[in-house]
Image (cartoon, rainbow, N blue to C red):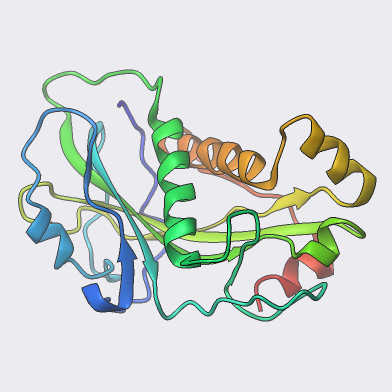
Length: 228
């Protein structure tokens, strides 16, 4: 997929995440090309010294990382603490559920993008979730609120796993439906998962095609509280 990547504006935190501390999807091949999964497994988050992205590039595989260090909250309060708040899937491994949502969003975001020529640099697109704060049942059916979504994107060499870009931290908050509007949306099949997946796919596509990158809206105090 042709990209004018701007994943060079923000430095990563430089934290090395071991396989036992994350939920990582298997490397998902998009097109033919060498992908050394073992190399990608061992790759830490890119540091501030990582090289800048090259353009054009062709994404041939993707990888989603959800660190186990992200705290899950199941409290049914308006603004529960925690990094992961997710209720639309049955009780279970919330880290894995969030990973599948990001997987679907990335696949959709990359779909339909123009193909590059043979001279494009082949890359793995890596997404690392930092915050996934959807609504609790109480907020969903009363006040509504904001889906607090934050993640890092970076590019990696398919053969070695070496970083080809600095990681960019993206705040992708989305206004959440509440009360009667939420109920009407659900009856029409517009669930939180559907809205979040579509929104994240648009954010990722923008990051890969717009020189300015994604610029999210500010949701004031409620938005800020979601990222504490």
